[in-house]
Image (tube, rainbow, N blue to C red):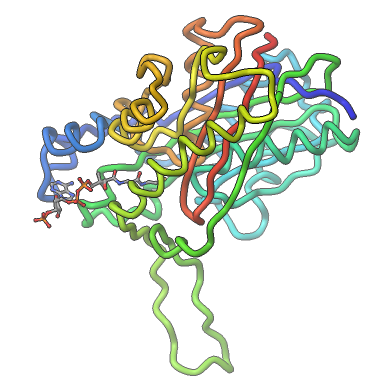
Length: 325
Ligand code: COA
């Protein structure tokens, strides 16, 4: 088995900034309510760039930072709940845009845990020798599927993309992975796909591709599962929480992260947060945060970090990583 490390990251978000006050223009809410309950101040909302465009821009930066030629990428995994099309996969569109002609490409669906799942899949491909250099992207244009009249959800989400290049290595970069799913909670965060309408199916069903959410149930789930994921990913390793420099959580809600910090008795400063500026970008959230940390020079060779996420599905997971750049 080969070892796997991250050799570069990149991110991109649309330039259009939408503040809480902007949202309060069309739904009954306020900057104070949103800030107090979520920590979110503003988010980026795409006007004309779909998921493949955001992804390609993030991927180009990751390739540049990793000093990798697109032709050397042999695997592209895009984690998204908001693809451009059902067919082709958005990963194939990104491949074409990048000129990554030697890659096998596919999208995965794990909502906000998508990047964690994607890094896990790429790690398995590389460990077994199937792949040598993989591009993993988490990207969303959630604004396409948000109900802009629903104040329970439209305040939370934003658009953006983050990418990482993973490569075969002699050094252990991905130290351990923990993932899981709980389909029994799927109804708490939903966006229907195309309904079953055909010549044989009887009465026509309406086509409502918008997000609905039971916020309280998701909140309860998140505060229970995040500490578990962090515990599990450290289990059977030589590391404990004191060895971890940063935890990069899914950027959903400051109160969730504060709760997790308290429950695990971790200094809140160990959790990197940028959700005040991006909101919840689902699959994009963790890789955007990670890339921002790299750009700020927060990560040094040898640092141990944990990526941890949860989301619709329900899905959850964490990765313990030694930074090798
Ligand atoms: N502005 C003003 N009031 C709002 C509002 C808004 N944007 N959204 C909801 N409210 C109201 C509700 O209607 C409710 O009013 P009522 O008491 O008169 O019925 C009140 O605020 C409290 O609603 P509640 O849902 O209990 O609020 P909350 O404290 O649970 O916060 C969330 C709501 C959505 C912020 C919170 O539940 C949450 O963050 N959940 C997790 C969501 C998440 O992370 N989803 C993504 C998962 S990947």
